[in-house]
Length: 359
Image (cartoon, rainbow, N blue to C red):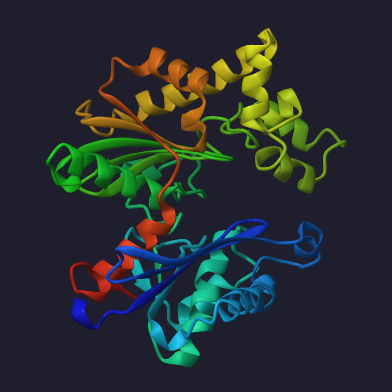
């Protein structure tokens, strides 16, 4: 499809209790409409799994577009945030029935990002237009040696905030007049979850995620296994309790009773030494992950990017810089560009600039 034939792209980015939608038009140069739909948390909790929320969210999305009088016939494609399907690579995939069914499986890790594929396909398919996912959370190309865990039955899969990491790497490379594929990056996305990845040739070759990397506002990160085993079998914690400690009630929340970075930053400014020590510990862990990932790049690190919402947290950023500034240049790029990245990736696929993968 030539660029001149391309009309609008609908971007869908589901979160745990929200769904962001944006319509990009005129070859991704203008935003025609955008909205962050906040769902009733109690209603969301009533669904037995993530996939069962699809129809509920789809109706709301279509109602929003209908309310502004948008004609769906103007769409050239629909793209959703990539989900938790194992075995995906970086880049874009056209959603087919096989992917749809796999992404809807209750056996997958239950993460709202999987709804991106389900919603995009269910809206696009009746209109006979393509639907895509782009830079899935699981879209890594780990080195074979990075997959080895120390337990033969378990292989590391790699889960990172690839979408924003690639977008910020491209943005930085462009600012210095280079192709991001010719540079070595360590990207650190810091939000409710924190993931760090090593990127070489535009591909993530190793990672540190929420279950084996640094702690985050609501996630434990990697913890000592012998102590964790004791908690698992102490008779006080259920499997659900342990899952929540890993993701939901771990990290800063476990120590400080809140995962709100703005609130914690205020506590530190008001002289709360304990809160300051816990945040410094998180920054220290992030720095250690960055240092560890520099090994797979053989120490040749062109740029360390600190991004995501927590990159606005000055004390945290200063702590990370303190402990790993010797590794390479650190670029602080707060926030995220996920919607723009999804649209840009889709445009590259529609124009033939980038390969369209398919299961």
